Length: 339
Image: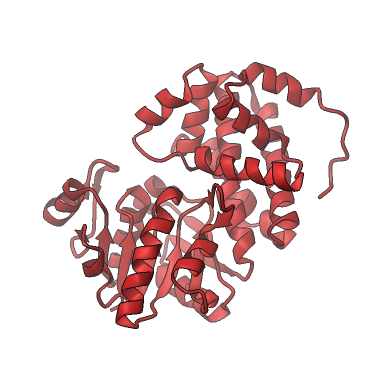
C-alpha cells in the first residue's frame, strides 16, 4: 500500500484519488473547503463537484496540509494554476523540515501568468530545485465525469526520468485507465495548458452557431499554434503534439460539454459576459488564466498565435467576437505547415 496525498478535492482530484484508492492505496485528499472534506469523510460523496457519484470509502479528506503529507510517498497536485505556487511553497517547507523526498505528480494544466512557467517548473522551483527528475506530469484526453463512470481513457505520463514515469504509469493504470510514458515533460504540459484556450474558441463557435467545418478548422489551426509555442519557446518535441496530450486532449476539450473551457466559450458566443460566466461556472476555467500567459509570450517573443490572441482580446480587452472572426478570416495568406 502506498500513501498518496492528493492536493485538491475538486472533481478531478476526487476522481483520481478514489481511483487510486480502488487499487488499494492509502489516499488523503487535501482541500480548503471544510464542508467538502466533511462530506467525503462522513458520506463518501462530493456533491459540489461530482453529483450522484460515490468516493471510495477508504479515501479521507483534510484541511490540514501537514496531516495530508505525513508519510506520503507520492504527492499529487490537482489544484488550479493560481494556487500551485502558494501550496508548493508550503509543501517545500514541510518536506525540508521532515527530510522526506516523495515523488511529485501534477495533473494540473496551466501556465503561470507573469512568470510564464509551466506547472513542473513551479514545482521544481518551490520543492525540488536539485531533483527535477522527481516531477511527473499526467495529461491527456480525460474528463473527471468520464473517468468516474469508468469510460475507457488513455493519457500521457511524462517525466525527465524514465523510471519515475514508469512508476506513475504502473500506479495509475487499471482496466479502464491506461497511461503511456513520454520523456517530453514540457511538451506534454504545454499541450495540456494551451488546448484550454483553443477550447474556449471552440465553444464560442458553437455559441455563434458555426458548423463542423469551422470547428475542424479551429482545432487544426489551434494545434498548429500550440505546437509553435511548444517548439519555439519551450523547446518541446514536435511529435508530442500528435499524441494523446496534444491532439487527443484538444479533440475532447473542444467537443465536449464536460469541458468548462468549452462551456465558457459557448456562453461567450451566446453574448454573456466573462464575469457572468466565471461567477456562475462553479469551477475554475483554466483557459481564462492560461491565455494571459500565452498573450505575454506572444508579445515578448513575437510568436504567431492569432486564435489565442483573439481569445485574449475577447476576454480582457472587450473585443467583439464577430469582429475577431472577421479579422481572423481576413489575415494575409500563409503557408499551412510552418513553425
